[in-house]
Length: 276
Image (cartoon, rainbow, N blue to C red):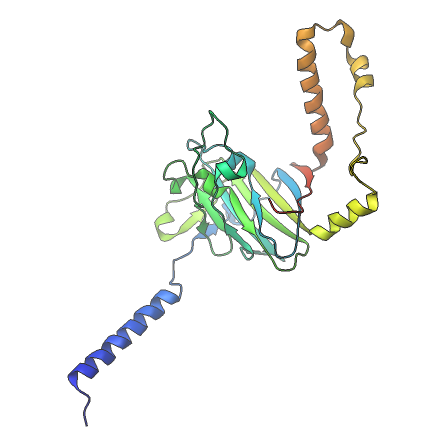
């Protein structure tokens, strides 16, 4: 007995739907961007900023670039690329773009350029990384490239990188074909991930409590002040300025860890334990 025309029509329709569904479910060629290195190889001798972030197992932790999150900077030609390294291989595993809401994250300032609303993530998928550049701009959306979320069930030593540039010597002539050549990099942010239990054990071993600080604040400037200038003879209007200069100098001295080649390494340790 031959199938009815109606049954054959339904079978053909079902087959077409299955083919169409398979095409949608499987990523098609060209859905991710290809980022080429400038001059064909990874850039070196880049100024780096290093932050140590302590994260609890299973906790979702925001990592962000302050300079991109504080103002919308719609007039700047930013290039931003987030990634991890699995050995020598770039990967975006365990990281994803995250929306930014200045009213929640504390970056909103009255009179500033951020608006009190959510900035959706605008990072694009580059296969082994997430990136954004000025060519994708659709207004004041740069904060949407500033923040990612990192999460693993068991935290081990890890590093998340973010390459940032304000240079415009990139090549985007093939951006319609999802191919892009990165510009000369300005700075590389490195977020060194450590298990939260490490810092908890250090704090416990240090004997720190409400009266004893974990990090001793024993940097004094009075001797240096007298050796550089006569504080008592300074006009009152200048004393505040000199105090600000001294505080800035102390911050610089405290934060500069070392110099490596032409790349200046600024090492800050941020003890993130609980949730933001």
